[in-house]
Length: 137
Image 1 (spheres, helix red, strand yellow):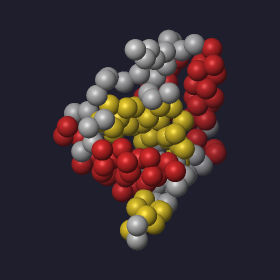
Image 2: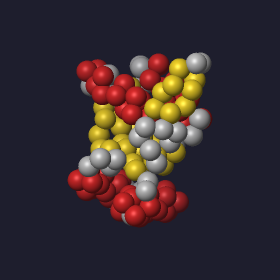
Image 3: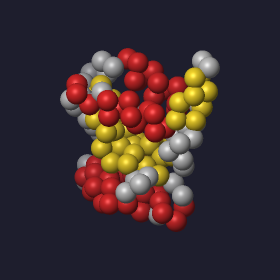
Image 4: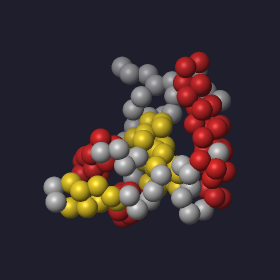
């Protein structure tokens, strides 16, 4: 049995906080271009399954920073040593995001949505964004 001590979501989805620089940055995969915005739009279009959900995105609305910081703080309450250091660094980066040109988003992807999970792994591999926190750790 696997026991997680950090960022934990329910058992039917994975939770992520990612960092990115440009919502409209694209990558060409199999002859098709896809952007981070396209990926987020796919998450929104799959929210009907109640296990895939888009939460905060700091790209256009700085008011999303406060709920994201609150979420990080709630995880910090239960975090242990090494994980706590990672969370503190993430919190500092989110708070400085306006100055450093970095943006953040938090979302959940259902384990059952194989296509969205595959696309997430591809976009991570092609470095469209960096996973800063994951419930899979």
